[in-house]
Image 1 (cartoon, protein in one colour):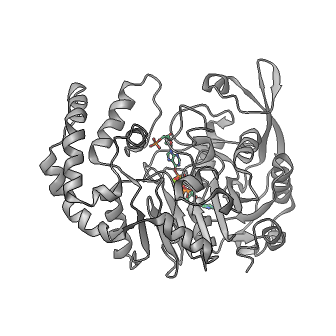
Image 2: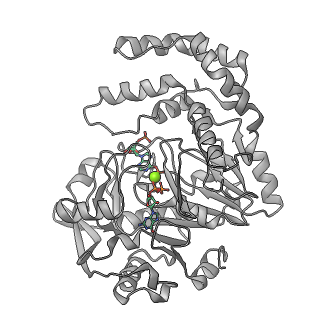
Length: 435
Ligand code: GDP
Ligand code: IMO
Ligand code: MG
């Protein structure tokens, strides 16, 4: 099977967009299968930077079809805005398909997101994009799917049924309420624009599988934000894991072949929740600045920490990574000494797993191995072998602690700042991109 998954191994923002774009040359399909515009994927090439939230990172490849699959939650207003942003930059969005079964984020879902956050003592720090409330509606079987959104009559019927309850709830807590006619009026041009793109994307992808077309699945968020395997409740409302792909794209489980974990050379987190290896002060600030660690979606400063191999082994256990793509290695340039967390202690006892309870995770103490720092100039690095010895030792430590080989090392945001290890990619990742 010619199928490849790109999965975040941490709390998101690992560089999935960059790696997806890099790998999408000659790919038939790039598929976003979960999440919504809470994601922010940055792509840089030819001196231009693009920030994508909903549209898959294969959009820059003319011969690649980009699919928003059934497991996504889609804000149609944000989608047409993103299409228009790309069109203005001369990027065509003709190669885009939307699943008729994907759920729709309506303006009231943003208000509900804010309402639910306001009622929580321990706030999640959501992106306020309406993700949780839309997935809640889906699971409660009162959601709105794309196939119904693009029909005027069915959208009206949906609003007739759902708005009274939603407005009562919003009004009770002093939030903005919504008028059916204004919503219908606002959505009319969006329905017209999106209707031709809405189809049974599972059928298309199964056809592509039969053809042995190359399909790349682009995860959003990261495994530690997974609704099942993440640091609950400080997570998102979908599963970005490899296991989510068959369900969220409508393909058979055995069709998924290669799984790449994207791991940043250190750790970041936006939003609240336990972060065992978090660091503060000058070192954190210098990494934040060097890595431009400010949210693509919300602009919030990202929290910074050391690489956490306990969390990465957990991510590998639930995803079964074939290889790592290690990103943002250059950001650690000049940091005098580096730390990698090898395991935790909890109540004085050594543990090698992420505790399920957030309360326990807040109390674990990371045990570190200190590593020598390194410094390199990208101008002198054409291949993996050119990296300084200390950088290679750091990479080998990641491989040893996780038992997953590193197939790609990213040393800058641009497409051409990417080092591929052809022997590892050939052996473990179907040889993809061994150019
Ligand atoms: P995603 O959500 O996983 O796609 O990641 P984001 O795009 O939100 O965040 C990753 C950030 O790091 C973006 O600003 C990228 O342009 C940038 N980036 C990706 N890879 C590298 C790298 O190897 N080095 C540096 N310095 N920046 C990178
Ligand atoms: P990409 O795809 C980093 C975080 C939010 C918050 C939690 C829940 O760019 O890696 P939500 O709005 O989803 O209900 O928020 O999840 N979060 C992300 N953090 N990268 C992302 O996506 C994220 N998407 C959601 O900050 O802590
Ligand atoms: Mg991001």
